[in-house]
Image (cartoon, rainbow, N blue to C red; front, side):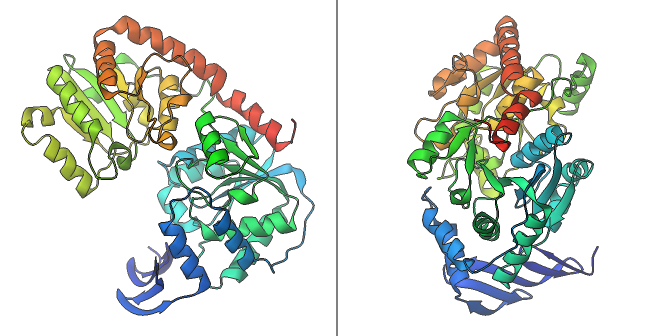
Length: 454
């Protein structure tokens, strides 16, 4: 352990927080050993507080204010090198969806471009994504630093200069939706360099800073593109889709290996198995209720040999909701199994007879991974909040996606009891994956955009 470390606006001594900054609508609070010392009501702190409270998808006013803060900064305009491409992200996580996108794309482009990854939370990333960053270090240089609100303009200038010195022709942006520092860097690069900024809209269901500085916004879905046009009021976009693994990269596990894993989960040969997975917030609405877990309870009641696995990590409030739903059904609750996030999720996915989409918030990469892993899935369509619905990742005529929960429930039971239908949809899904999401298919689309070939 380091004697002194910095992470997420905290200064730690031997792992204990001794100095911390936090943001609120009143400004930045500075604390020593947890005791508030004073508050800053700077222009930057007020802006950060407003951004954290914002729910409007049109972030142009925030982007303009951030750009104004750094409008006087000037950097040398290095001539972009056509053979260099840089990735720009806030942080990486071993379980993060956008991290997987970075890893997959960087690997697929590594033979064609000299690549570098710039992070604004570098130490945090090395702690939270040791596997992903280890894989990336084999093909590119990981750069960046740990940013804080202090000496804001000076650090933005230094960071923007660092990216410019690498001379990337293309900057592929995966920043967090509220990363003010990264947005300021984009503003400086946009004004001072000829680097082509491609903003990957990986958090399409959130308002996102920085999009107004993009040369092209890359969307994965028609619905996401529509939201960007109508709610963000930006039209410089292209639909490019998500990139998956190469067709020969997936390991398909033997029946014995699957049987052994099931047994560790308490699932025997007489059990049918449904499964879901994703960040815990995806299973609950804003009032902490869960129609998803209500449906799972009904399925377990209807199917006495069924067990249901959820790969997630609930917080206390979410756990309380689940326990309340199953309060009077202890026998059903025993057949609901929670598993923490898995780095090797492929093996777990391949255990499922049927995979059940999360809702009210769907899972994009998960659906693609299910096609690749040859697992049948039932998908939820959210028309009320289309930014939370990712059913468009499926083929247009996919027969197992529904707006209605009752229909979804019936389809799950149907697939559980009809192995032939499961096999038919698995084959169709895999063929669709090969021509839509397979690594080299999507790689060609990225290269076309990066080299500005219309």
